[in-house]
Picture 1 (cartoon, protein in one colour):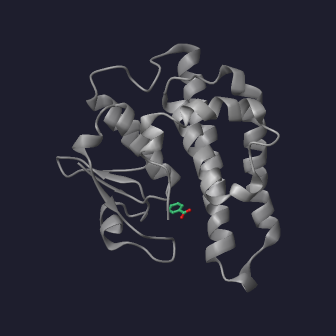
Picture 2: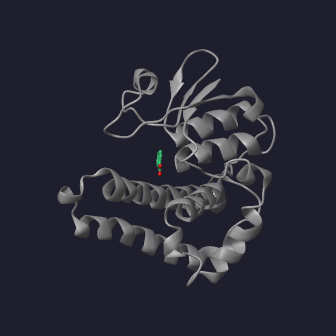
Length: 203
Ligand code: BEZ
């Protein structure tokens, strides 16, 4: 399998962490693709018309996107414990945690484009503030939930961990740990997992 990703992408990291936890990383060739909404990557756009990473090309040549679909696919290849609780409240909790983590990453990445890519004279501070309010509110909800966050990986907590890792990477000045002590205490051991250590984002 081939994975188009980038060392900075939190959604790409999410797929890599999942592949690592499912013991499938050895079957995936990582193709680092440098791209942005204004600088598409030809290979990625050929596989995914949305021009976005991550995108997985299966051994059968089928392009799969986005991170949610790719991880469900990888999970289906794995014979062991699933990253997706099968049913009941645990399933809906994990999927909602995934949605919250994805939403924080979406807003943080969009704001990164807004503040770094967009020419200065075209920037709209209120838009940027609105995006970061999603992050602030998301962190507040995670702090409320922190006591119930699992220490073993499932699709919910691994997404949350990748979102927090992206904030450390691109928003270190915002010091998300202050004001979120329970979340920080949960993240500390989780971030030490080999899957997280092997995928620390970089430029
Ligand atoms: C970043 O550089 O922050 C980034 C790169 C690729 C996808 C998303 C974010």
